[in-house]
Length: 314
Image (cartoon, rainbow, N blue to C red):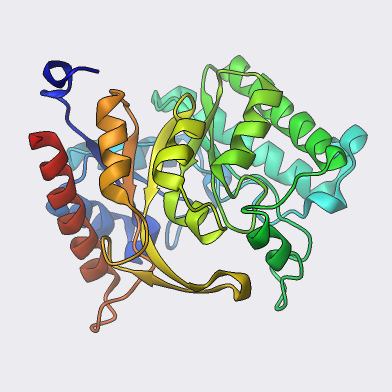
């Protein structure tokens, strides 16, 4: 886009309200007060899992969001497939795997919810690397040294089959599937996500880009090369910051936005220059001296607002 075309560009912001650790009513009031436009969650305190909620209960939640002048960014029925190890699956019998079937059914239910509420996007994850969610994480050094890990052909076959099943259902329900990036999952880097997306070949497959998670996995040029990888697919960004102390040994610390290693200024400029409609979804993970999750969120929002203002005014 030219300078004149980017002059009116405005970023959109959201909040992952799980991190506030508040009842829904308080979380929504806090999100409204902080100033974001959208919210999303994977679970709510004192409520059933999202996939088990009745339509009436979900309608009530949607009304509460609307009453606070907010919008739902996407529907996430917990974290589908996040904790399933890909090595436990077989490409020709995915539906027979009990944990996969449970998460797949929850994902389809989230699609029904999204379609009813007019949200249009649901959340999914991309399965765990071997040895994840254990103390030693044996494959981490290999993944760090290869800047994200190599996806073997046998594993790519499983990923393509699984995501093809997801987007087939997404097409039926008229929604998109946004894949969240986790250091412990197979789409931990923009390169790995792009390889999966190019193999699945569906416009319904999107990504919630996580520059900090990408960087934490050894993808150094995440702000530029990473952006180019996800640009055709990005639905939103998971905005947090961290400092990598020793990547090979998985030694890192979460930081307030701007105090870590992620070049968010370049990220924001690239979004502006390409007229991206991606939503910036605030997270925290770090804690200030007070230990308050709310204070951490307010700090990150203030930092993000300052960065957005600089880019919008250029």
